[in-house]
Image: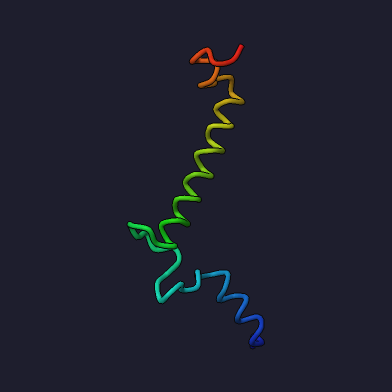
Length: 68
């Protein structure tokens, strides 16, 4: 049998807690906390993708001759 603290940890890691009565991972449009979470996640993915692309030898800065 699980203790109450173990159950709270399990519940916190399996589902995102509600924010103002709505799921934090819900894909909602507009200026909502959920939309800002998705915006940040997609920005992080784009930033890492660009870094990997740049490490592969391609660069928008060099392509546009903005840097030597």
